[in-house]
Image 1 (cartoon, helix red, strand yellow):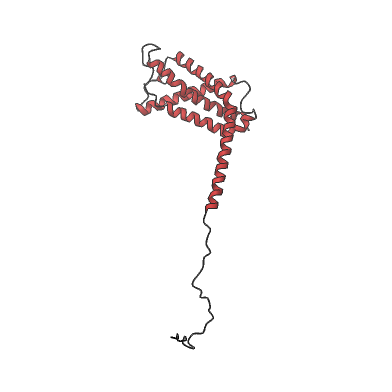
Image 2 (cartoon, rainbow, N blue to C red):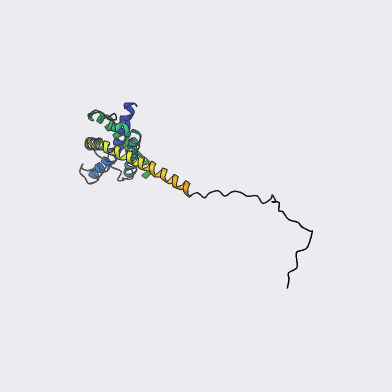
Length: 201
């Protein structure tokens, strides 16, 4: 299994989750006036929930596909720091995509060239970098437990599906033997020889 694909899937999932968490924090601080006067946001958080959903879905997909590699210790390097630059780059790309899509949805055009940052350049990058490190460490430390849980859930689903299929087969009605009434069965009798006896009074 390619180590690059193992790490890229992890980095993508963490980057999307970190961007979805950091974005509303930066925008809240901007809207509260923490960065001074000026418009730094589009005053909309429509993109946050879909981004979190996508990030969680990517993480679940990664765990389903790579759970055995995670438990074998082949998914990530022992030191997670070398992955942080890639995660941060993917996080910034995700943030730009989130905010651009949100502005096009809400306003039908891009408002400003730097409005996607949600705040002043230095402050926004600093908060996103902090969340990048925090989310990466939390997910990396929880990855083995999440992988074990994922394998247990998969095994439970397979067992439940197998049991349900077996129970359904048992409940199916047995097919009755089809009998054709077109073929007449010969009956031993004598017809037309004599009348039935009279009933005695």
